[in-house]
Image (cartoon, rainbow, N blue to C red; front, side, top):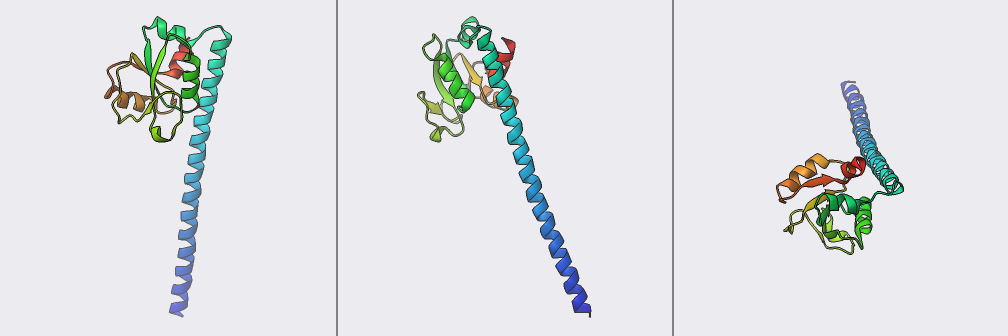
Length: 158
């Protein structure tokens, strides 16, 4: 009798532990999906603001020129980073290179380096990664001797 009770209790405990583990996995998945959703909403809002800036007849070349930035680097070479390269093509602003933690797997028509590589001197680094800007700015400030600015702040300040 005692063995039967112990077996039943063990089985129930095992089922409960399995359910708890499955619940944790599901909760982790929900958090990951929510974080991605928040990131993509922020990207959508950034790009929407960029369109509004363009519709108002403003452009980023004038922003950089008015701040004395002639040679820039771009941190974050996903959608916004590539769009910034395109925006500044055939302007007086030189995009010296891009910086991205996935530097070895990104195709672009500018040099892409890792933050751990040697970073050539530029007038400013523009961060297009809109989440974790403060952490990125802190890290880059240890590696470069120039301002580190957020594309989001630039666009909302225009």
